[in-house]
Length: 550
Ligand code: SPV
Ligand code: MG
Image (cartoon, rainbow, N blue to C red; front, side):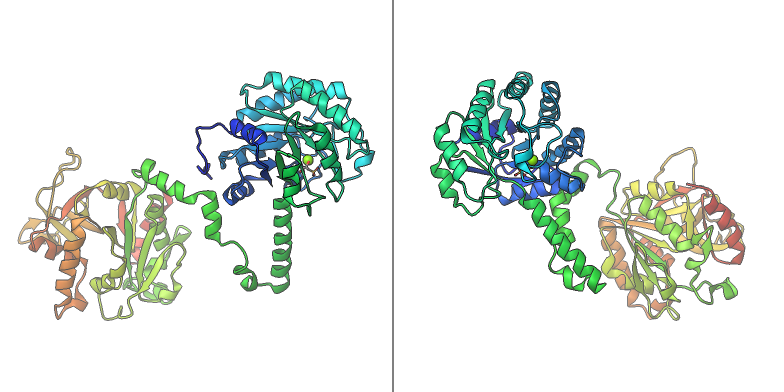
């Protein structure tokens, strides 16, 4: 998640909390207990967050008795602080020890941009005020005052707030004791006094505030006297109201209902529309920001390329091995041939992969790919399959045969190429006259001393020998199309589709037509490091090739 910018980041969080405490208006802050709840509280409009000890311990699943260590609390606060711009006031219990622990706490809180801490005059380890409050011993006034002074002396930011929480009324003492303590804490440097009460009416609070008469800002937690209209607090010149535990309680009841329903129904149907969507979670996590940042900082390692994989044929050379699956599903070193190819593309950041299948398409592992069908696969060829994927064409795409194994640098170099149309040609293959394959006659032969030489395709042929001329290499079955190349590619495909023999045409026909129509088809030479699987005899070399990494 990233910090929201709901309020000016130039004003420090500590300064903002101080302003809330000193504001002439009645202000409100609300409990949060982790990053996402902090974000939700801020989005609701609150100008501050109460990092409640009760709620933070509860979300850890432990008791509000200092069972979570203070560093665990501070780590949790860091997540809350990182994703919000409004100030966070930590419920720091008793300060987690003596004056020295308090000093260290203040240091660590400031380092995490926490705006202030509230400490209560009880004994470590404390117990929540609503559990047997009257049995709880109070801290010695002097010792507690020293803790406040120690915190104030160590703080770096003059606006960091230390709020002293008076527990006298909780522990069964009278207003006089509460006032005596509050005054001592004010003198010790407390920026505000939190006066706590567990009565269901605000009587103690109102009496206290009357006697206090604004000597320092007053903070209250009306968890028990919640039915009191806030106008009453306003008139009593309370500065800050803390809604102290309502996010954790909301979360708990929502989760209890969902868990019970899902368990009973063994289904998500009833629950799906009642809970936050996954997209809403992504939004709260700031997924959009990451996408935008990737555009800015990560674009040279990611690619917008999409892949179209032609995999409709059964493969003739495999006898019964392909009775129940197409050749791309034949296992090679523990995974199907097609999976090797898909994994290579994904590793290079090509995540949008469309596979056009035909023969035994339902046996194809669809994980991570879009599967399309060429229903006419028995009577048509590669271009007919390509047409099935036309709606997936993109301004940057790689069209490839599905039966290839290749080292990953081949794909990397192809992606880094900026020609409109680029084919990969292997100059290392045998070019004996009897060889068949997609042989490439090119403008230049492969000068291996020249990296990335400018070479264009003249023609693809089925044999390596044309009237005594030898081909320069063999096309491996992979072509990259980008920018204006897409239009050329589509125009030629459209034109070929009008031909009576379209059903028989393959990718080489398309590439040759591009050349014939004057479109440059750039050649990227490689020297081995790939193979295609066309018959049973190719399986063993494929296994040893795939067994080597890279
Ligand atoms: C908390 O939220 O943890 C508090 C307030 O300390 S109360 O639970 O009301 O004591
Ligand atoms: Mg607490």
